[in-house]
Image 1 (cartoon, one colour):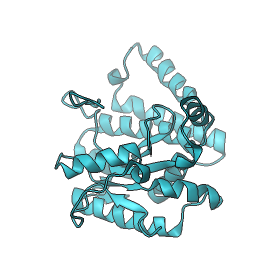
Image 2 (cartoon, rainbow, N blue to C red):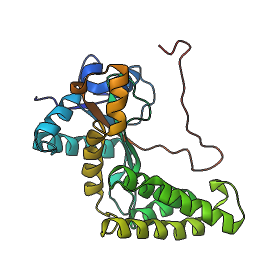
Image 3 (cartoon, rainbow, N blue to C red):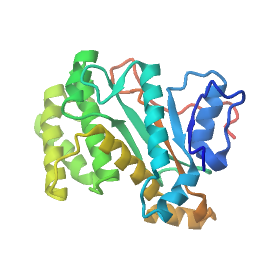
Image 4 (tube, one colour):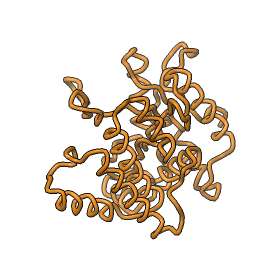
Length: 265
């Protein structure tokens, strides 16, 4: 239990550790790619072992994991030259699940974590791209509200679709910065209405609640059903991968997607 959090590319270790049992499939693959000197954005994996401990410990994250995670966030900050929650050059991260075997769409992901009403202004000043930043913020509110706060996604999607109808556009990419400003406020209103609380602004609260939500998604109805159908043991648990964000929505020269080697297996 001493080693609970694993850096993708730990330069101190002589050999890359990439056990799927401990790191989950996604974490193991990230470690392997980093070991091949591919340009993997910095990050770390919280071990699958912690998932079991999480459920035995009244669904709480152990203090050792919190300490090690804080240390790893500091290392991401040094590598990226950004700071988590900073008001001039903020670091954003993704929080993703990762079981031993692929369970596509069964568990949860939160992107753009670290955005709030203040860091969104900092990122806009840094990138000089207000449309990208506001689009990223609304995506974060949408995902976090669904994954962590349990608010149904369709409530947000309906707002976007209705707004596009009134504006006479078809694609999300046709919406401008000011359009997203209004929708962001509408999204926050949904959160306030459904939870009786404001959307969380503390980036550390965002991080810990997102990590907890990924562990909780291991036992969601759809994940349990998928495991039962595919004979995947319940005790395996999921790892959690925290990684510096890269973006596919900064402009026409950016994209996200999936790449496979010639032999994907």
